Length: 244
Image 1 (cartoon, one colour):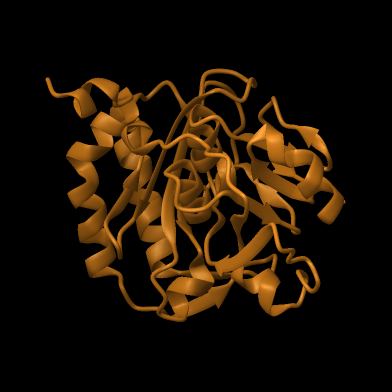
Image 2 (tube, helix red, strand yellow):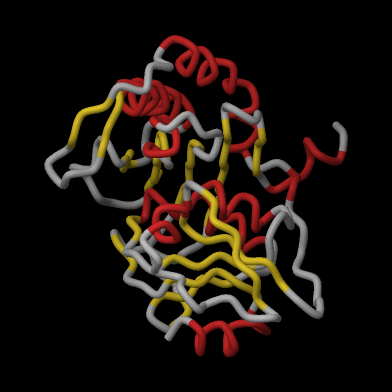
């Protein structure tokens, strides 16, 4: 067994075997036509197709886990699998590659477990084998919601020390943070657990922390209120003054 295989969680090993199944679903249901859900957010046939496919896979992985997905959220109990089958639906509809599949598993309400993120367009996989720890620098680049950026929610939030880069899909951004492709992530809108489960679990293993309304998140909740900040603890005091 090579080092990467040794470091992989059971979830990552299982999904490495079945990732081609997810790719096939994406190829089959790649039309961006959408409708609106009851909350006014867009949903596509790919959202539903991926949700169904991932639910089938997760029942093979461990049928004792409760499946809690953006497209199927009727049950809430632990152990829990929190899934966003297509995080970044707007980006998918607009033809951008900034969307991802997010899966996180929790044994209990304590925010600990295994996460996995996959971008089917770029073929990027984020798991334990890609983790890169935080590095001290003179300046840092954070990634923020593209839609929040376009709504001018980050006006005057850039500083010489903390630059900002808009990017779609909170799950994708968190995967990128866990692998050293940015230095922090901020969102000024509420997020559901399925949005952030997989990415936050990976970030925590890489040494980053997750803060909601100025407090570190340590338990699994259905929704988290902003400001939401994912960063190394050494940056939090400064970032929390910019995003109070």
